[in-house]
Amino acid sequence: MDRFLIDGAHPLRGVLRLSGSKNAALPILLATLLTDEPCVIENVPTRLRDIRFTFRVLEAVGKRVEVLGSRVRVHANKPLKTRAPYELVKQMRASVLVAGPLLARFGWVRVPIPGGCAIGLRPIDIHLQAFEDLGARRTLDQGDIILDSPLRAGPVRLKFPSVGATENLMMAAAALPGVTTIRNAAREPEIEDLARCLIGMGARVSGAGSATVVVRGCRTLRGVVHSVIPDRIEAGTFMLAAAATQGSLRLLDAQPAHLKAVTAALRRAGAVVREGKGDILVSMKGRPRPVSLSTSPYPGFPTDLQAPWLAWMCLARGRSRVRETVFENRFLHAAELGRMGGRVAVSADTAVVEGVPALSGAPIMASDIRAGAALVVAALAARGRSIIQRVYHIDRGYERVEAKLRSVGARIRRVK
Ligand code: EPZ
Image 1 (cartoon, helix red, strand yellow):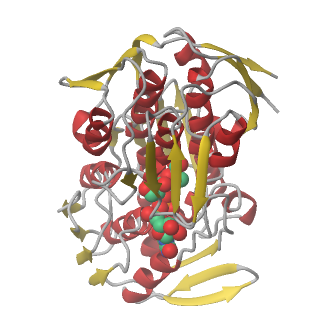
Image 2 (tube, rainbow, N blue to C red):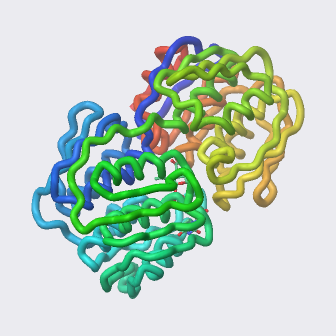
């Protein structure tokens, strides 16, 4: 298992180019199941573990995947299978997004229920209820959900704006003749990107990015060439790393419009953020002001940046509160930050952070992608050496992170 060795307290300075968004690329790659024609998806962060894994999921159900740098070509290989293997779904829960396209096309699909994970129980009841609302029948067999009977387009209201359920449903609706209206839909930029891809395939989609998405689908969708949006969570993580190390970073390919809540919070804490057309500059001098915030679905402050934010607030000049409202158990990084001298007390959904003048390096362990990112931010800012274990979590969501950070002055090394 790889580890990161980080010698901290060196300001990050320079220019970084962002990768394509993992969380946008993932459903878009699976949307290629909606057609037998070849699809080309560009700006895919192909080195990420989760993306490699998505290729395996596509291959398991019968697609062929060719990768050339960040360009991915997906084509029909053999007739598609309508079941996803448990071995894959248990390793990456987003594999359940095969259900929408396959069910809509073939009227039958078998998907294992993914178990919980480090950050919460993460049920898929909202996905299943939505499919039932469109006419699917659900049975359970050996831990797998079987959905059958043909879907019909129609109105659906989600009880929570789940990102995955919105995506699953949009993909299904794209292959259903008629109008499907999704109310209380997720509004994340990744939803808008999926909508653009589905439109390229021949569906008519409006309202993506608002709480009501309307999809007019058609039985036969065509191949598409689509370029994935830049990764706003990678951007936010680098913004926080720049701020925590009291450095200055310019992020190329950033979309400032996707980072409004993060930019506002950084500014309140004292960072300077300049938004350009397609880039963003962050710089910081000294310790941050304490800023309390709550995570919430987009356009609120993203849960995926809660952990790196909390790492920065450990260095604030005072007390802040960070409330996690999206996942029920997303504070595993708090104890690890404690090992570095951070003072974080977690009670229910809230972490209370007493800022300290400096963190100190320590051996620490990543528990999920973003908790891992928080430890990288903390270690880059801390005095002395940190050793981060379980780097495979970080590799799921950050492409070549050590090479990127080294290019802007970080002393970070991967040891096998
Ligand atoms: C997506 O997960 C992202 N993953 C997550 O990124 C991100 O944290 C999350 O959205 C929220 O922004 C991908 O896009 C691949 P949800 P998803 O369905 O779709 C509950 C990362 O680090 N819920 O919006 O699974 C659920 O338990 C990851 O990159 C139900 O109760 O998120 C959670 O508490 C991690 N029933 C909340 O809703 C359901 O059927 C939000 O989940 C579905 C969700």
